[in-house]
Image (cartoon, rainbow, N blue to C red; front, side):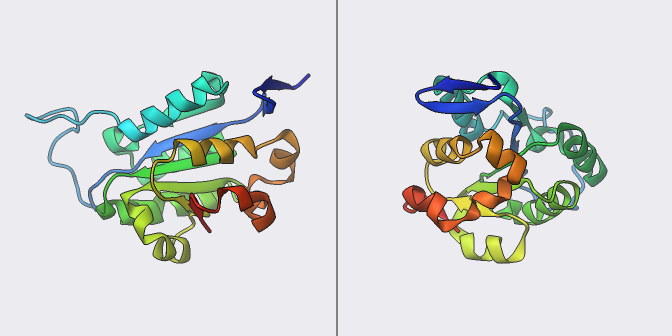
Length: 186
């Protein structure tokens, strides 16, 4: 059997999920110090950590996802490209804690789309309040408004082996997402 069954949901063994924190600064602004330095060093994105724990409580093993803290590491565009080229996730969740991260969303989602055209890109956080603009002006496929744990898990649950083989972005079919209508804007 190639899938693990938890709560009547089959989790594909080959499923690769990425959760990414987006820096609050505007893209292209050089940092004057490392994120870990200074009187108020950055801590990991609590929204993503909460989603990771929710996934684990619902049967998703730790090896099915990777949390890459772009906010802390502040990688170059080439480092972002290399990371996604190597990890090759089927599903990417971008967490944007503040609207000033919009320029990073545009750049990172474009890099992901260039490297992985079939990967589903989902964005949450405060920037999701501007869902229409994000969907129209970036390579983000969908946004989650509000607490993301339940909606994210439902999106993950749609990632069957057949769906991965057909292309994860094919779940953008309205009928498949009907149950999530209150939580997800297309």
